[in-house]
Image (cartoon, rainbow, N blue to C red):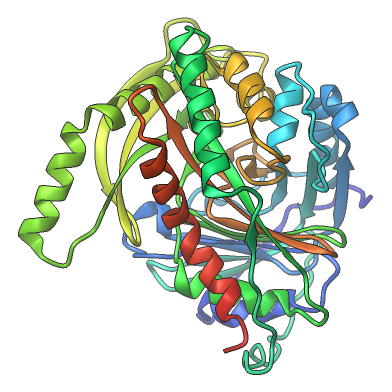
Length: 443
């Protein structure tokens, strides 16, 4: 590990768009790109961060997840600068970017999945040297603890022509997945749970010679998202087009989580679009799901918040994303003295919006009825700055890549009134853009 050094040097550079910087990641054993796509005038789409050569890498297996908070703190401290960083206008100037799998969250709740997984429970990269990208103001900075110059930009990624088409196959038939929905509904009727998020994987063999950076370039073009990401290590790569923030924590201890539950399409006809949004606001099933997850997240952050500080300043807001409108709520709180970002993550993973209510029993039922481990899907990707500030995303709408396989996950919230056939159709619609990126790769 690198020893702590001086205060980072932050240098403003001539503007380059994020896609021009991304080829820096293509030949490295490890690299990370937190890639905010979509309309830059919205704050959630504004900032991107690219670390082409992380200074360190840590992995924690499931059996050691009880040590996660300590390992995260030690890893951050081992790479942190000696002095305080003065950059009030930049949200992140370096730190740790890490991934926690869904099964890591189960372990934090005291549960063990029956499924084997090829995704590390916790893996993180130390980002001592990185690009900071402000898409709104079209400004670019290079931050380096060791005062290193920014790397020279390589040639653009090669054209896609000649790369293999990839067809991912579902792990379950439509009838088998719909039967799983009915099993969940039986548990709801018996009073075990109120709601559960049921998912499925599509799996493809990884073809020889697959160019993962090129695949990510196609994904970010097809599915621009506020929490897009490329997270690459020697054994595992995540390509994400997530639209959902999980948790944020500022340096003053203010917490916010923004669960998404409820979806409707976007129409090019303004009148019809307004009608679709109004229908979403009145949809009792969607409102009930959102309310249950909001209550669950109030409970989760309440584990580490000051008594009486948890609030819900926004409930059932309709927000526009690249292809759909979503119902989004906001829950806030003040972190209790003596706790930090590591404690907050350990208390709240896996994210409530992809589990169910009550959470513990929902996790047990999900593990019983689903046919494989979720891995990175439904976990969280986070950045933790030198100042202790945290931002994180729910890993949805993503492609997970290992040496042998590519996986896509999708799912939806199941309540007692849910229609299994309709839930299956909605799940397939969520997976379709990602499966299409795989299928059209190389064309």
